Length: 606
Picture 1: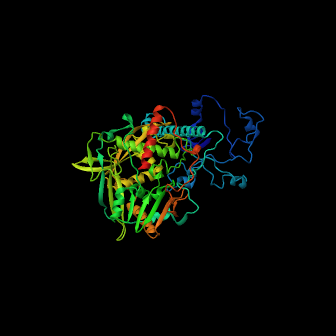
Picture 2: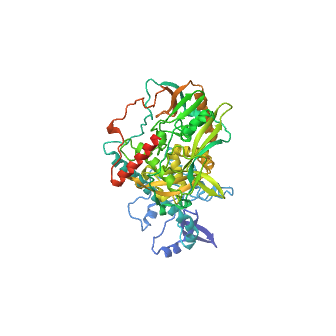
Picture 3: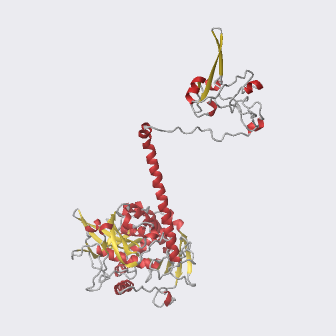
């Protein structure tokens, strides 16, 4: 670049080199002799073109360029190339004091001519209109030195660590999904695809001579509400043992083996076989008679998935709600409300029926193990009405309670409590139940690892998979006016061993507070009972059965013959090969299985 000026009558020419900083937009002028000294090599004389930009067109000037190779043209430009000025500081936008402070804005740059009409005045305007700036963002400025280390490492290092944690989580999730796929593939076989949904069967065979009276969808149950007054205790029977408080300190690190109580008898007597209820019915103490297990089934009907049935007998102006011998109500469902289907084969130890029998066995033994077996007991007005003379029975107390539904209808229910505990000098009754884990792969939560640190997550998983069972236990505790309900967490010693179990933890809850946690509305429960009682009171005398549909969320009311479900009413039994045969592993297993069968037989005979 040549800059000329007149000084003291002399025509002086100064030669400079121009250097531009693309980031800051600043241009530096450096004299030629200083530039040559800086770079350390000669470039020769640069001729001055007085007529315009670029080298002169005259041959003599061109020949004076010593460093230029011969016969090489200067400007082999094509129409696709963009030519223009290097920089322009005379633009009004650059010198405007009201311009934006954004240094990255291309419109404010001294080197931007995208909006200038004179930028490509000699070029084709159509070619300019198709030009688009791909990336005008300046490159990031390198951050060096101790200042960057101390100021910015706090923001970047945690971010890098979070990315590593997220990557490890994603990898662990992929590994877990892969193990689950391999597990289910090995269980179902290579040629048998995994079933999408479980196919449930009805709890009772619907006979062709049965007449359907009504069909009630569960959607109508959610809208019902009824408030009852406090119940009245008519009679109390049985005896209770005290609760062993040391079980509250049980944890997966100091688990306890689940014991077997073969000598204690457990009774699951239906309503019409109860001598106390017969006495109260003869004394005309109430209109409706029921047990707490049947009543809780009605109250929590909208949460049920498996099929169940309740026999209703209308005798005069009285109603009796019964269960059949060998009914599903005597067992406990497992993973009833889970999205993961259970194996359909009854021979499988993880099938729905096998798990129900196992859960009932665990629940009975657990309710007796957590007691202080020192002979001290709390007796009620009368002894156990189902026990024979000298017979050892389980610790249980029966409370026959009456609720008034309206001016003409009152309900009596037999409610159960399993233990008692002294609190501040007063006796507090409690119910005792046990949740059982059979295989962590089905629930996705390993109790041995999660109970200590994430007990809430374990309970939330159980509420999702066993919503109906937990709601029924809570309803029974509320009906019995229990001060506390104890929940035990029992798991198998090994996922493939369904005979031996260990207790991992015992947690206590207040029934009404726990009902609020699981969204169990007491008014809605009594509203369902009131609606069904009102419907049955309009029926004629006879026998009826209320059946939960196995596939749809609804119940059906059938009128059945008077001899239905009696000894002379013969139903087709299952073939021998389809009946459940207990697995034989060793002598101990055979002995335990026989004991379990003995308990079930006693329940049926009672």
